[in-house]
Figure (spheres, rainbow, N blue to C red):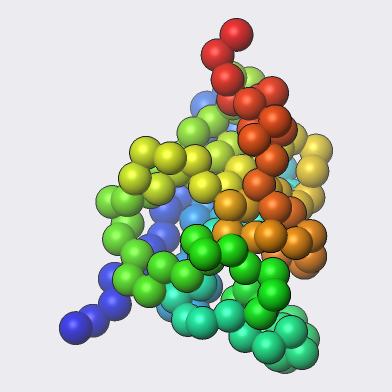
Length: 146
């Protein structure tokens, strides 16, 4: 059985920011660009397709210019999605278009907030180069209806 490619992108018409969900078949990241550019301003880990890697191996990915899969000890039980399906994912923009969340099967799983270079992910239990653990308060402040 072949693995499905997971890649989604969308530009917000108000902020002119792009959001990109990119899966390299070992892990997936969410990126938010600066307004009107393709330059990532924020990033957060979404999931691994493989088991978490040893922490020391993360440096090997970085040396190759690749985003590393999440490492052992940083992951939650939601961190591994062995066979993701593109139709499971959708973007949710803040009202001003400067922050974005990613949902899977209708539930937010990660977000990148305006002015923050590392986002929040339900797949993370510790702060690290992959991002920060999920903060429901931070999410609600930006995405809840007023």
